[in-house]
Amino acid sequence: MILHVRRLVKVYSFDVLPLENRLVFSSVSKIYFRYFSTSYSLAVECHPSTSNASSHQAVKSVDVWRKHDADVVIAKVIAAKNEDEVFQCLVHDPGCNTIQITHGLVTRLLHRFQDDWKSALGVFRWVETCPAYKPLPELYDKLVDILGKMKQLEKMRALLEEMRENRLVSLNTIAKVMRRFAGAGDWRDAVKTFDELENFGLEKNTESMNLLLDTLCKEKKVSQAREIFLELKSHIPPNANTFNIFIHGWCKINRVEEAQWTIQEMKGHGFSPCVISYSTIIQSYCFQSNFSRVYDLLDEMEAQGCPPNVVTFTTIMHFLTKSGDSNEALQMAQRMKSVGCKPDTLFYNALIHTLGRAGRVEEALYVFTKEMPHNKIYPNTSTYNSMIAMFCHHKKEQMALQYLRELESSPYCKPDVQSFYPLLKLYFQAGKIDGCLTNLLDDMVKKHHLCLDLATFTLLIHGLCRADKCEWAYQLFQDMIGRSIKPRYVTCSLLLQEVRQKNMYDAAEMIEDFIKKMKSS
Image (cartoon, rainbow, N blue to C red; front, side, top):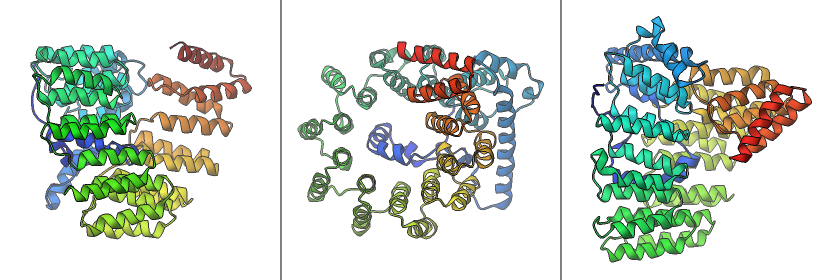
């Protein structure tokens, strides 16, 4: 197999940062992505780079064609039970043979099947057989990540070996593999992957060491990471990022004192604590709702000539809102603006969320429609999601639908599963199941090709059980299992009670068997 190597152009400025800076920014900003997650928007691929109307129209035409191709492929594989069935149905389908395979199309398909590893793997094996197309290394990395995310570790290992034989493994690949091993509880395999770096043609250096330490710390294996660091530091020198990784790790396991000692160790190695170092500890105090210590650290940062940045302020504002003190959160927003710190999209997402929680809907609308455009800050998927959630919270269904439609037509971003979640919840509360809820689900799956996640499956199954529609709930449960998404025990228990009452004996037996397997594992 001849493999074509070419770099993908990244659409977000985050991706052009040096790897070590991305690691630290990722660690400190994780709280944002948990509460204000931004979805990867494939629509950015077709955003015009010039104002030329004909050029814009041409790009739109290409995008529509590719989208049609993606729909064809998705329709073919949707009923397949395993990756081999997916592969066979695509290889032997005459219509699929006429599809022009492009990097954009493969990216779109992998994004669609990011929670469905069988379809993702089958589709990828199919595109590998197309004579005029060679997948990019980055697309292999994406498949590695999908397999790891879905706990298909043996298949991930096999793909990694295939990539090694074809010299496709990069440090980015190794980062994904180590993260997925650690996330699955196999942190020793993550360390083993680092130990075998030379076999992949890669070097053990500060950057790769930091990747390993960051992976372990994010999985709360900070003590193990510390032991490994002490072994490696004699021949691999640490940098400031190394200590910031440990600061984040100690804070993650609520050992803030260790994080503060790490700042002293950092100084001992000749590195000055930066805004990331302080912001990480501030975030930890926010988790504890220890806001008096937060304010002390803010003052200390300014005294040390290390002023807080937009990440720092946004973190504090979010946690103040979460603690129920929306007024104090809004004062923090004013403090940020008063010191000349420029807002960004994540800040505005948090601000809109805070205003919504405070019942100040008109002010949130003003921020979205006036202040953000004035400051040339473009909304992302999470911004729209915040608006939709706010309107649903205040039972403003039509306004929520209006912003969902605006998101669907936005040139900058497209809906994700979270865009629909508040409306689904609202429809259950209002009893609008047969019409509104069904149409919304059709939009999610058929129009936007979104895979339901654990939270959405759980909401639907619980809501349908309460609405006396356990047949539909059981179908979703089967779909969930088929996609290797493990339901919670409470979901299984609730559905089991409902199907028993309906005398659905086969369904009850299947759920009972699944519960037994859950308990034994």
